[in-house]
Image (cartoon, rainbow over all chains, first blue to last red; front, side):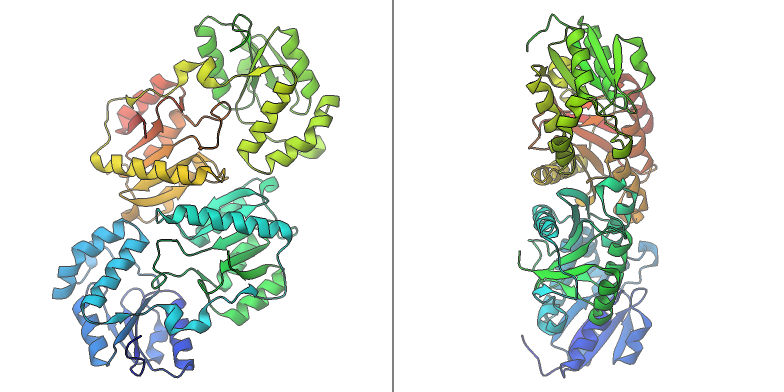
Length: 280
Length: 280
């Protein structure tokens, strides 16, 4: 990693992840500088040294990072893709937009690779969460009080295999399996929507909050470089999984992020769900 | 095939498939005898030589087929799995139920293999739709007036690859891809529910009825034996795909069934969707 003595530049889009990273990096003793994307980032950025910029203002983003003395840059959060007609472009944004848009249509990985390329070409080192905020990485083993059963473990193995098989096509990061039966596979709808539809399946396929069955697995896709899009679970993931009767959640140890770990563990314990980091 | 001079026994569950098969077999000059499953089969069976039996009355089903002089048996339609407490079992059903239920929990393929095994053990030859009603098989090439674009063809190839990759895990038969982006992957929810949720995705990911984009592929899973569960498309599939803005539907030539072909083609032409049989 270059420039560890300099502030880490965080290009922040929406969601809880950018804030969790900023906190974790500051706790480790390093300064951060936030470039907050208009229409995506939330108000918390005001608590940190920051500057706002539009998602099409690539030149402004890069200048702000240079002015703040950043050498390392981290991209975090979900970019709310703006309508073309409302997108404000600066000169650099205008040059970059064709390949960014073309990449966006090919899926998340291509989109993130294109963004990463943009910052690398401007001379920054693009760093991943695993390097910058290792405290967010899922540990190995049980996280919380509940442990998976033998049946859960076999479902976890199958769900990991499904996500892996799909990874080559940049489909999704998540799958749910209940006693051998694949309940749901994530594509463009996102993990929360995927979990929610489990409630629509016939009851003999799945568990209920009273009798929990089945597991959720979120895993990195094999083609991901691990720098830009590690799978994330948080309090909402646990609450959603609990609501549809799943028995628990598994992620890959060291290759997934856990947000709000204290609250997540409290909720999982109270609801009777296991959360585990595994080495599949 | 054994017993082609004898009537074909069709064990009919729900949906349009059993009727389409009965019609097609009769049109080819062979008699049929229907065992209609209580709670699953529809009233059309009354138009054919038939007998009703409960899904747990395996002995009754087998006796009826023997009495009708059938040597070949075909299983068709979706069995509405009854509540345990309401399931009427005869002696043979009681012997078979543990392994059928255990198989059902492992997914559709295991369930169908267990049912097939039951009839094979009783001395019947279990035949597939491809043998008994070849007129229902998807032909090679364009079906209807609209042809897929180059972009559609590339999405078709990707969607086939996704279904194949998942086939080893008995997940689902369908996937939708739009300009490289996997929109949806079928698991336990079924194809119609999978198609419907495409409407919930952001509009830049997908097409609209005014500007159609993206394709639906239904394909046989690699582990399927091709006898019991060929993918099926019908009028509803075309209507559902049209409603969510897809450009068309592709199935594997000779390895998928097309129901109500005349009406399906009329609807596809009117709505501007392509339907193709491909050899991927």
